[in-house]
Length: 132
Length: 278
Image (cartoon, rainbow over all chains, first blue to last red; front, side):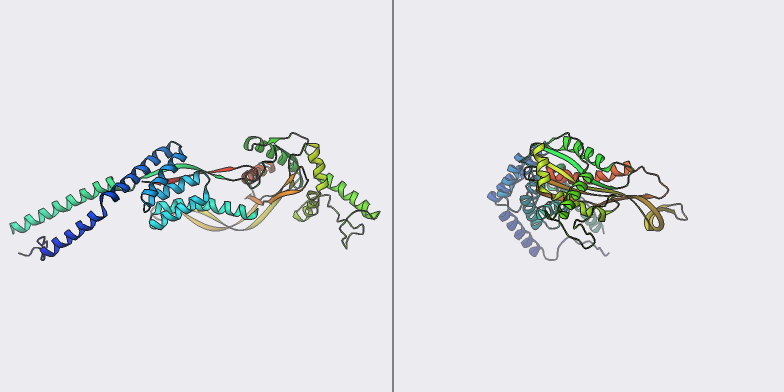
């Protein structure tokens, strides 16, 4: 009888080698130092969110600045930093943070939405400055 | 055959396990969103730190006579400034600037006749001074009144009288408007199954309402010089059958304009929401 499902691979050796390669790459990426920094950045972002929700935006900025210092590839941290700068009226810094967040994660619709809302305000302020 | 069935079962179990693992991973490492309210401060257009007080002097008003546009504008701006700016608002009689401009014009005409002073010579006017229309009906009628705001000596004198405040003045045109033509409206339609849909349709309509065109002029009471001016234009049209009092239309239109006016003098906060990510 014909059976369409075949789980016993034709090349078990090949498969084992692929898995080994993947494990090696992952273990390299997850080197203790890198993992520690990433973990620390994540906890800084968590803390920042917590304080921002209580209205302590300056403390949140401090935390998120630390997070991007620890992990410069952390798009969410840049996004949060952009929001905090915006709330504090630091529009130039906010734009740079949003730009970086989008550069790191261009397909993130949440970051794009935050940026679009910010841009509307920023454009208005720029126009005012030009008028002056 | 039994071996094949058993393999199928194992495959299903493996897939279920994988799905479970994926779900757990999404919960553990997935993106978490936190919507937060933000208030973005917009800096004031003008640096008014040199002033402690503001005098909303009065406006050259024109258009409909259904309301006293000068009086209403002064009253509204003073009350807004009292609550939404840090400047102390001076309570003074509302200045009748149309009369002031007419007097200044008359004086200028006399000077011109006696060969003194600087006057603008126009071909249509043998006195050499551009006449000011007594009745202001449109923007064209308002234009010659702009000279009043450039009269630094006059505004400096007013400034001295009130101990050098920031002076807010300008012109306001509030005039009836009517228009007719095709407008897009949303209409409800029901299909054969009774399902409701809203579709845009073009319909001919006669509409009437008002146009409000204020020009705000900010004058430094210490020097009498204009430091900033801003013109806005807003229009409101209703169905021609609808009777809307002029005063309520005026306030509706001013509601759109006042935030911009306040934005010239004090920091405004724009409220919104953003999404924090983990």
